Image 1 (cartoon, one colour):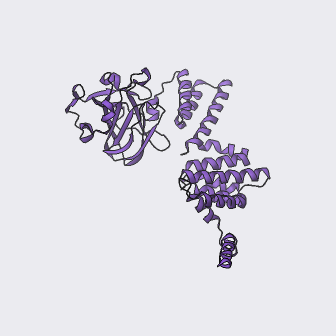
Image 2 (tube, one colour):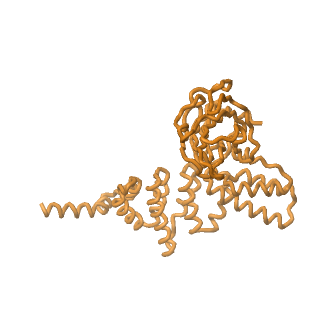
Image 3 (cartoon, one colour):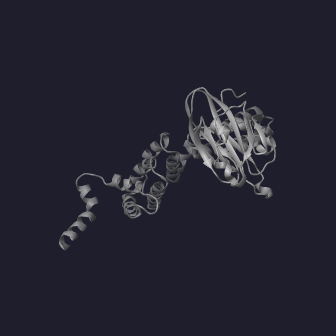
Length: 378
């Protein structure tokens, strides 16, 4: 029995070499082991062994590792990315070439996962800075927001140089408009908007981001003791904009509201009155010219739920969590023609000055953050 166990141990240890001798490359199996990593440490031991074997394979392992990121979950992606970085670091230190043509082909194939393509870009930048920099202008319309940022930053710097050289206003406006059209990150968008305004141009940031400005609002309903978040008040059951319902402090009915805020903020304190322990609803009719996948992105320091055509896309019972742009992202499908977006916004009863906000903002866009506008938007 002991001899059998010893032979079994040797067979397992030599398995990778046996597969190589049989003409089968075990690299794919090792990558599958990384992809199989799960939470609570499941698969970590096997992944560590596979990781070491992959790294020893050197630069040739990079292209299949990048491809594996397309399907990798967050934990597996960490393993894969660290393997790529370890291989690249060793190769650059030992002055071994990376498979640049394959990495470039991966980068230029926009069907791949954006963060994987960003990693490919970083590899090329480290291995061949001049080649990588020549690629930057092609990123202006890239589905990877991170790669777009590189292109927008480069264009902004080029425009600044043109300003210094005395380029005329009309050309500067054209270039700044081009950069703004490509920009998706809020800091770059705000910078470009400021530049255009300084040149006497109007900039509609709400339109650029896809914030919904026109709403029908109703409330307050009761949220004493935070109980209202779980209660399906009438607007959740059936939308009837002509109806009147019992509210927290008497009858409530729908009102029309258009926010004037550039960032699309809907202030329920102003629209419905100052209330604590309250629930408010907002609804909008959104028209689409076709069926299409969309992101519904919501920002609020209140507890919120939001629906698209009756399907719940997000439910976050979190109070006073700040107002980071695109805090909550729900993914849904617009149907051709009329669509209904409904938001439930709950305020609690905290009395501190910083806890008084009762507000939200919502935008409709694609995965890159590119605005999708209702076809009836003026």
